[in-house]
Length: 389
Image (cartoon, rainbow, N blue to C red; front, side):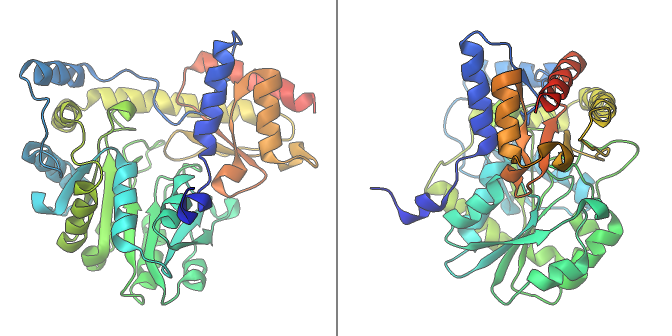
């Protein structure tokens, strides 16, 4: 009864694990979640006040499909700090999360027969978005030995005349890797040889970096590719606003116009109240973001230390995001990472995400977007679960 396209799409493993954990909690079981990809911090106080103020002013009606002008102006200013590129609001679209911006872009750019290059390990939704657009995902293999940073020669091997989209993500999910200037320059040199390829730069974790590392915006390194680069970001991660669903894309007028057509015909505008919350987040005090970032850095250090004490598991410190992508091949034996994750959840009450969900068997993703107590408790259960195999 359903379309062939839907049959190609796999359910999100991360959402499935989260749902199973919620179900087990409802059954009265004590579950520690080290799987969820969202900050455990509340919305910042000035953002909360902006939502209440907008509600009291009756700002609950339809807006322009691409977002209110005030939000797009705030995005333009914020993105100038990131990219040193000033986008007019006509080249900005506000969406219901960065995920919708990526989806709209794939729908606007890809046709049957096209290819989209995605890094492996990848965020679980990348290949599914490509398939839903009728195109073929092509994996760019990254390695732990290289710090999960792409080699230009590896990118060159997977590029073809059918490549229409190249997805970049730094800091990345699930690895937390931050690609330096040299890596981005190498990518740019390859892409210069393929004028039909459009870059989708997913920068959603750009403000969550650690140890003095800075996330470098692709257009700072490769301004010559501005005419075919789409910068995608949002409020979900850095401003602890996952459920408010505000993202955006900035890019060439032709692509933004096409994305507007997709949005006009599907969801129309993002939530009006969320748009005004986003204005407050982007224009308001940034100190709460820094407090949250510092707390994440402490949690990262704790998690890496504790994982390193578990026999059969390895972990290196990620420079960004809030995930540790741990090598568990020694502990697995003849099991898969999915079987290990199921064992840990069902038998030991701790939720993690198998590496296979991100295209990389032999690994498990742990999230440190939770309290230090939960990290300690959860990794104690992981240690017990590994020892019981």
